Amino acid sequence: MGNTQEKADSGKDPQHSNGLPFPAIVLIAALTIFGAVTAVQWVLASLLGIIKFGLLLVVVVATIGWVISAKANR
Image 1 (cartoon, rainbow, N blue to C red):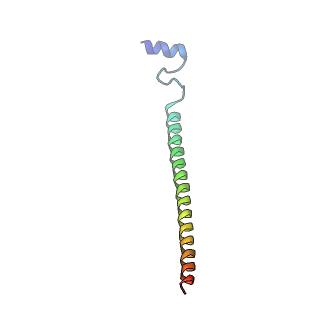
Image 2 (spheres, rainbow, N blue to C red):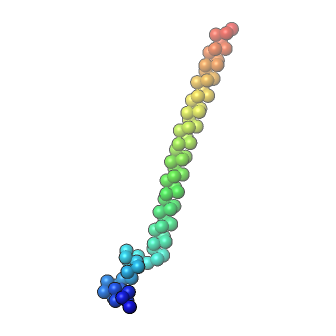
């Protein structure tokens, strides 16, 4: 009975202190999770891009070094 009185006094359900309906809470939670997953994917893609670029530089430098050493041995 105390819950009914609290609801009548405050004008909203005490279990939902933010006043949002349940579907809105679910929507906000889903958007938060979606945003977190998207951010993690972006960070991982950026890191992988940097790593791939670094590996490309290693291959180019190694190839140039190989060509120079092959010409020096002639």
